[in-house]
Length: 63
Image (tube, rainbow, N blue to C red; front, top):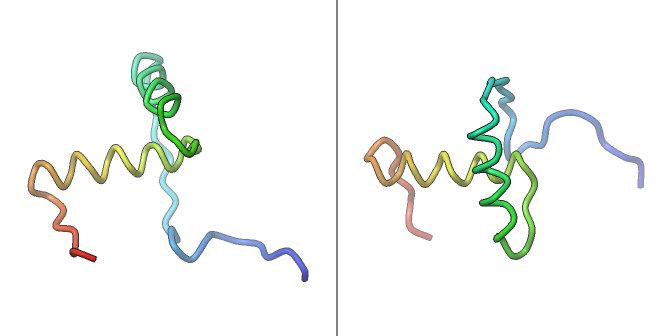
């Protein structure tokens, strides 16, 4: 099977953000305790989704 190229259909929007070392260190600490391991993009999505949900900005459907 040939490799596919392009954005994953699950996350079609890509944004570039700038962060400082303190935030990066915190994200890396978060990643270090995740089992199974997750990449940086997954960590940022998880952290952002949790914060938005906890603060009433994102309403996740129950599954």
